[in-house]
Length: 215
Image 1 (tube, one colour):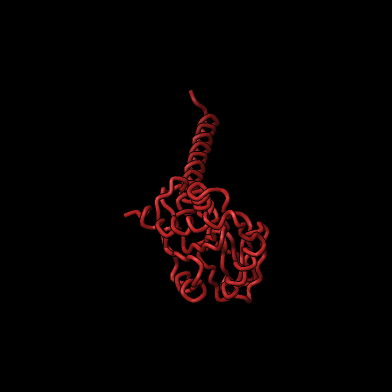
Image 2 (cartoon, rainbow, N blue to C red):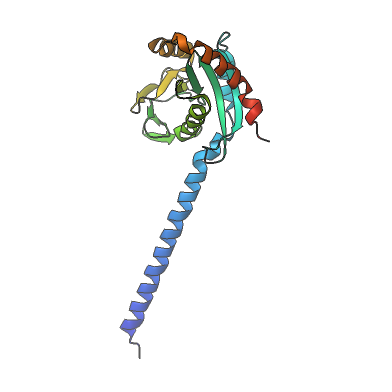
């Protein structure tokens, strides 16, 4: 016969098992939730980004295409969205969603997702995840060749926010983006033998949206 001590032991072990199952279930749930969430905000270009593009990225001579949605075999979701793409010589600049905050003490770039510090509060930037842009970089390098320099540039709207860049990301204030891109190109100018390839790149990128548009 089971003694009262044995009953207690059985109950304790049952409770331990239930708690363990709940913990495992919670961990699995959070893993899938976070994995899904890491890409769900890549489904659209923010209205602030569209306004920024219209205001600051009317490049004229350089090729500018924006709101490009295309099939991407390198993407987790199978598709990618580029807020803006600028071609300058052999440079392909992927412009991310703008980080738009009214006030922040610091915007810190470390890991894939930047975060904002306001006093004692810290929160992730929901509409910028560098894992999205690595997928796009991989596609562009596959599509157009490794002789081109692909760079991701993240614009930050509020100049009163201090930018701390642990990852050496391409980051600039939105009002200074033209000067930033100009300086990046001057650091690695186009070689003569790449001029014809650059023209072909222009033509290919112009067709990118039509060739890869998904329903």
